[in-house]
Image 1: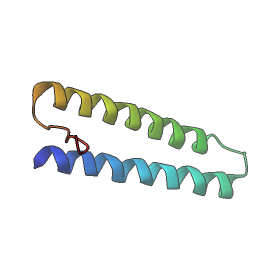
Image 2 (image 1 turned 30 degrees about the vertical axis):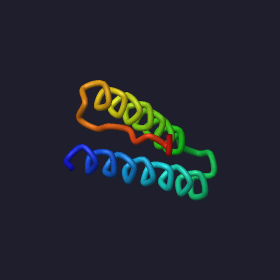
Image 3 (image 1 turned 60 degrees about the horizontal axis):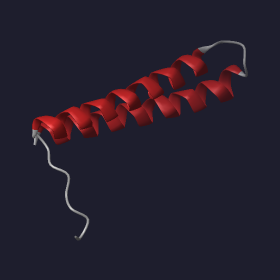
Image 4 (image 1 turned 180 degrees about the horizontal axis):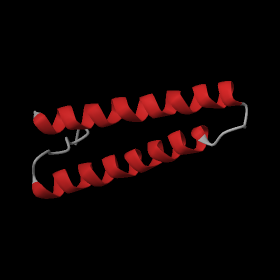
Length: 69
């Protein structure tokens, strides 16, 4: 259960950074690099989440379900 909560927390932070990037893009109008930083954090968190899920599957902490086979 804790693993699923960590995954959901990652997704919430990823969505927050995506929204922050959009907000900074609209407000700053290219005068600062806050948009780039927010979107870079989003990409890094997304890659980290993928690696975390792959590691958790490898360790057996979470199990992917069979899609109706």
